[in-house]
Image (cartoon, rainbow, N blue to C red; front, side):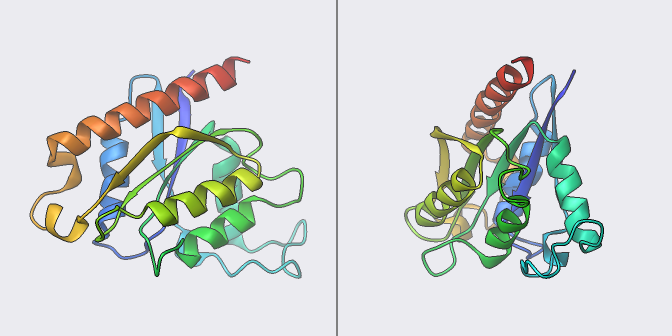
Length: 187
């Protein structure tokens, strides 16, 4: 059985370096793992309990919840917006955390990675994602991290999958996430 890893990207921009990292992760999936890049974050309405009614949730919400339920693990890629998590990613976490006590994360392993222009590679945003998804029920792998600084210059002419150091780092975090997910599925 293949381990399913759902990847969410906190940037909607087509040329996003974090999206490129996610694309590289899809290519670098280890044997026995399938990495799915979720495409619909921009279609999610802002979380509103009034529209989160069983049987009539918006179609985009039903789609992400179904993808998350099928997943054995999660991989988040996030830029840093004004020192914190992008709204689109926080909104997705909010939708996936419901219904309260039975959200999609349900103890599944989670890794957070990303790149940003600054010299720390977006660590503040990544820490906020870890905190939020952990509270929402995910099993955050605190010791599996990847923060790549200087995204505008580092990836100006090179796709992350063509950067040998980045590809090796992505391969390592994918391997570790796959191992944790495999253990969780087997349990």
